[in-house]
Length: 522
Image 1: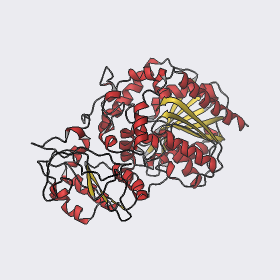
Image 2: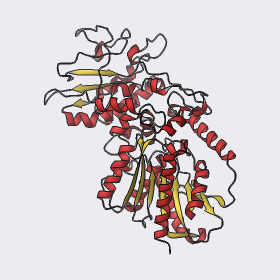
Image 3: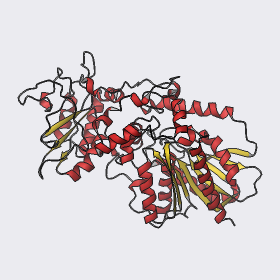
Image 4: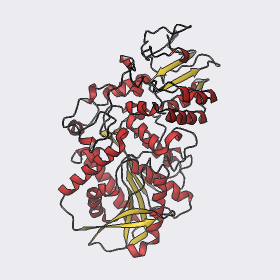
């Protein structure tokens, strides 16, 4: 939050973001004209949306709250009667400041530097919001600024990059007692259900995974602090390299890196891992590493992929795709399509069976694999043999029950996911025009896609979007093998590879790969 406040304190940034909001119909020309004259000491901007009925609220409020605004408002114009916004907005404490004419500081004209900025108007009978209400999600910044209302203060977030953010704390704090991020305290879907699930999330974690989680070093933002992106990237690389040097070399697997030229002349690195003693032509798995599409690199998965190569008997081509925000979506899927075309075109030289080329990925990489499959289909390319998606990142809208449920486990929670999508597709996040190649859940037609394996975790923000995608694939005539792992959080197999639930997942995953490759063996 403080990182965002720092950005909002910049006048030019406020102007650009207000323009982006206006383009989405959330504020008007007057807001744009007034943006340069906002006091520098108030790190805030007004973003508005007119809500005419409950259906509109269900669609627009989540979109609004996904924007990185320091201050947001909802204009409830009850053209069809009072609008029930309590599904999305929780009452916040009255700051006690009596402003101007109407005696309430919820009107923008009444917000003054003397106001503590934690405000609400009285709710009418029946718990319905009427009139004009402001949800305050920020405080003042700059010399002499007053803090936000104590009841609204978020936990402290560090905006200073760290060389290894995931390891900056030697002892794990008690996350179950930490207040949830501010936007999650103000906002929910199906409020009562959300409260129950948040309360019970830690109790529902598999016991083996619970013990591992206690030892996981975390920043205040969880394992991955995306507000300090470069530092977190360095930390992920350092951690992966430290693990790699501790694992004995596997002489039965060779590793080669090749560069494939993109249309603009830049190069796409691809790591080829192959069993040295297997006779070809061999099937190949085109692999996309995890990292929420903003973190990670291809070589980080070498230990896992070497094991897969030997167990399954295939080649793995690990794509070092471009990361966001430097290369916004669909750049990563375009890299996937390029890699797929290159593998098939070089099949003979590489010892590949071009009829057995498949796609796979974890987390953000699973989303890229799914987007690549859509792009392959739409470009009229020969279909992959299958796609294997492990807890894939598919939907930018963050509107499912599970996306609201998982807020404080610490491994890719709701707040982290929202920040990641803002980095991946920017101010288009949640908008109607987002392409399926950016967020595969946006695809309305899933027919003609290859057979699909999907593994999902019960306590993962991606759970419901993964289950929905599997159901829609099945409805579109695509053969689907779906696994849901009770008590598992995001990427549980990487954090707790020795746990029974991790072994069960690897057994199912490798088994699917073997069956699919063997079924089409020449």
